[in-house]
Image 1 (tube, one colour):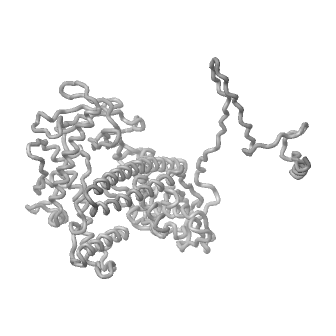
Image 2 (cartoon, rainbow, N blue to C red):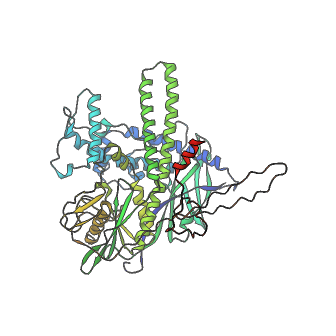
Image 3 (tube, rainbow, N blue to C red):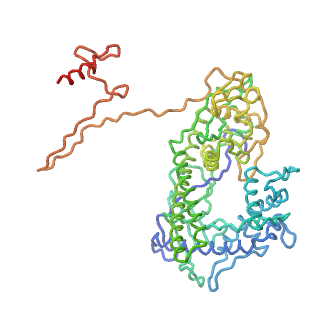
Length: 602
């Protein structure tokens, strides 16, 4: 049903951890460390079988079959990965004497098929780019057909791989290269996607404020029979921010192991309010990705006389997390460079020296993994804080739509090698997911719009903007309109969302998208239409003397209170008697010259 007060289904993800584990058959409690060990055995079996299957299927004929989408009997391949693998006969193999249930095999084939289907697109792109690659100059010719166009960043990465392939083969360049010629098989992650199985392997129920997961785990590293697979019932608490949500379905999680133990990556379906905002929005918020900070926002309103905007938006404050991420990124690159250099030295070193170098390489890799884990935590915190701040800004403005730049057409360039790499490493994809999750809870729709020209064109006359004050300022000589570059880009993005509300395309698993950027003049409003973001104020803390009981036989310390801070956070001299201490009264301060002369005379 579409209309006022209607709802729509939406899936979102969250994480949780088990705090109780019992044996499903006997009801005896099991230690969480034992559960982590048994889950580790399960993940080792899945990762080993998946790696072997990917290596066996790493052939051009595999990607030809996936590109055609037909099996051996010319039937269309189903969307389910484990069903498609069963039709094609792509089954994993396990060590001799090891028994693995068929449902675990479903998990392995589903994960492998998802990886191969993703890589199939890259195989087709590499084949098209290799046909336009000149091995003598190392350059790509201009594409002649629209179907041959690929994103510039992707093309540069493939170009580097083609140049490396030419160097390895001493200039013997083939006309038609495949992904198997320039890349090795991808690594298989140690995880178990239980959603690919059925109730025979795992099932989940929600009781009160807890999730109960019953999953079949091995009791030894190499189970020899069905008796060595037993069901374990795990209980985890539902996160507090999900209490009171209209959740209709809880999906089976993905099990992974991190430094704290077993982690559930869960998904759920909830009902969110929707008033068909993309057809009749009146206020839109445009979010522009900025290289200096994560993003900035501005508001455009649809009025009877046309589009209007205040042209002064809101800039996100990352609380110093961006500087910390840049430092961790530089540290990770340094560790990677050291490990790569030691690997080159170890290849031609003596056996004793090689053993010492391998120990150092292992230590460097461990430090690099720790830095990567810390960057992941900070990126997640930054993304959800950004999503909540933008949602609050849109709610205060009574906006129905939040327009963001299409990340597939967005490329950071023109800011130098270091800044381009730093901006490209920002967690924009996580920020979009967090923003969509936070906005759906309050009934605001997030839509992606074209990014080209958003910060380079005037929202009023659609002419190129000047940069009189540097990168962060924009000025239109014709309209006499100027301001912050990111805020003007936000106005353009919000304008594109309002003008393209009748041309929205929807794809499963993706945000609603507007592919065409239309233009209409945005008049500057004399009235303030955007909310004023709250600013943190300095809070004075009054620290009194500590009440400490004096110890017998010990001389107590003399606590000297700090001077009282003035209004201007400076210590002023004590005014003379009879002075009220006003700003108009100047206090007498003796000159330093007579004092110096008296010191010389003594």
